[in-house]
Image (cartoon, rainbow, N blue to C red; front, side, top):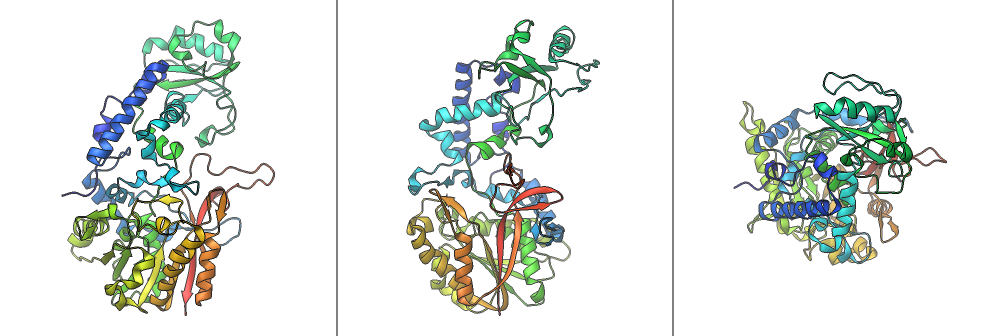
Length: 524
């Protein structure tokens, strides 16, 4: 039996996967009906077949991805921060290994909490299932699909742009009026392209959704000029959205389906969602911080919060010049397979049996063991006792208090300790104490955590973690900056300082990037 979903072809071939021009031309009633049908189809596939609104890979593509992990040059991830001159930025832009997400269709059902009442948190799944979020869904979908806010399907025509992709025609319009007259007289005949008029009040300023559009000038047309032209109704379907006096032209190629590219909107704009720790970044850290003991017969690594299996997959892919034994724990019962096995183990077994690491001429597999419990309870696990004082590395990305509700289990730390101070003392401190006591001398602890805004307050997760470890007697060795994937509008620049507004930021290859710290501690 397969415990992962595969490529979501049923959704992509579904009648709800409309062409861009079909949605563009819909009346408001037709558009709302399409939204209703879209939500129903997504929920049906998600609930009945474990297929979230993502594309995914088929089994052979997953195997191919995992095969590429073992030889991937992860040492190339380390970059210099141009702000400080320090070579301490991990920038991993590869998607290799991300197929592990397909073992966890509940990732996008994880609720993100913004208030102390964690019952009010929302997930991407909630936007598809909850009636009270229907109108919000319509608003977001209008922006992203009907008005193409990500510029996936239609681009505005730049001043002095040469148009040469419509049939055998070539044209370089000097004005928007000139373009419309030319298109209706000559280009429409080919029926390969069309255009629509966008209210400039929607996007007067650069939105952050497409870097290529930054600081560009476009053909503009006034409302009076537009009324004097013979413009088909499908081209002006969006002009009543806002009371605008000036419009720009968005040209598009016909017959483009909204999905798969449009699936990005659900993850980027509708709601925050749980993300996996990048498996190749985990591989890089395992190799870097066990290099001084790579000849050890077995390198024991504890991951106190196994999350979505990114770190166990990274551990299995560590190069074959050392023997890794991954020890993980997590209380999430959504990840159980039967009564005595987890999806973590299934991921590791898949890697160890399907890739060339097991089937090649010189097989070499790393090993693992899993515990279904929270890290604050790990010291009480009988089988874990034998590792006390012998662990070779502790590395994890723990929960950020109640920011993310990974499951509804009562054993989740945000439910056991519903106030931050109680969580810090009941979850964070005992986890770090266990890490310290179980770690051998001359070994490292890597702690990926960042301060988080919760209920209007910035939780001091970074300081509290570091203070606990320092008080335990560990030596602080600095931090690595794990650069995050670029998100639309995610690196806004402060007009006064010229610096990003994010709390943690760096600069690599003249590009501003947000980062999460990975704190490095050493046990003498």
